Amino acid sequence: MKFGTLYSYWGNEWSCDYRRTAKKIKEIGFDIIEIGAGHLLEMSDRQLREFRALTKDLDLAVSSNIGPAKEYDVASANPEIRKKGISYLCRIMEKMDAVDSRNLVGVTYTYWPNDFSDLDKHSLWERAVSSVRQTGRFADSVGVDICLEVVNRFETLILNTAEEGIRFCDEVGEKRVKLLLDTFHMNIEEDNICESLSRCSGYLGALHVGEANRKLPGMGSLPWKEIGQVLRGIGFDGNVVMEPFMLSGGAVGRDIKVWRDLSGNASPEEMDKLIGQSLHFLKKSFEG
Image (cartoon, rainbow, N blue to C red; front, side):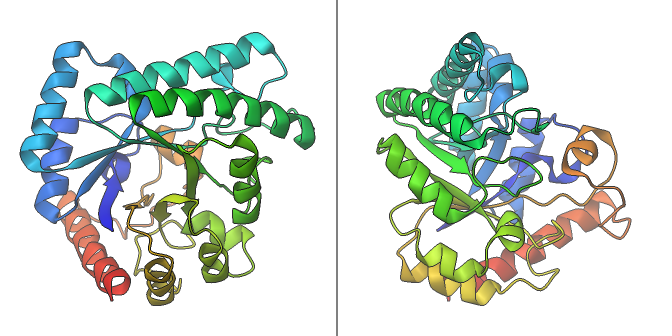
């Protein structure tokens, strides 16, 4: 397993100085930086080359995370919006190839955050399967894995459980389409996190980790040692990426629903220390 963190841990906006953040993440001891996939489309060819060179120099893998806007909803009832969404995700994967990012993770089977204006789950599911089949074929052509994030009922109605995720992947039938499970979402939806993970052998492409309140692993009560045992048991050797959200305010606080400071009013230096301690805890729990 390789360990990483999402870029936004230190801020409350969906933006980042990736050069500075990549260096900080490496210094703390991570193997992976998870970036905002949409940001790749905003970067020039020169910036893409420089970012690739930097991450190679740091020996830091790159994972790309996105929850597309509604205008790119590949499950939309509007065929033009679906077409636009498929094109958007394929353009992102082209840019991912330029920075040697091999994992596109997130809610790429619909849009996020969902406003629940369409509650016809059966039709949404069928349209999403058809669209993801197309993006999955393109992903294979550029050597990218699409890891579909299973999220809780308050964020989408399509994929809420690992069982649904497995069935969805089977219907898509593309080898590059896998699952991204997240311990925060699983804590809400699964009867038993460990049992659900154990059923995902062969499907699990990546794992997001965070406590039940989105704090850093080790700051709450989730069964991390037992989760690690299950991951080793199913032979999981993919990316384990922290997705902590502890700062209120800004677009991040609004979208993730962080209405109070969860860091204990930590300074940037204290935030560095906390995530470093969490990484040490997680490695000890997962590596056995």
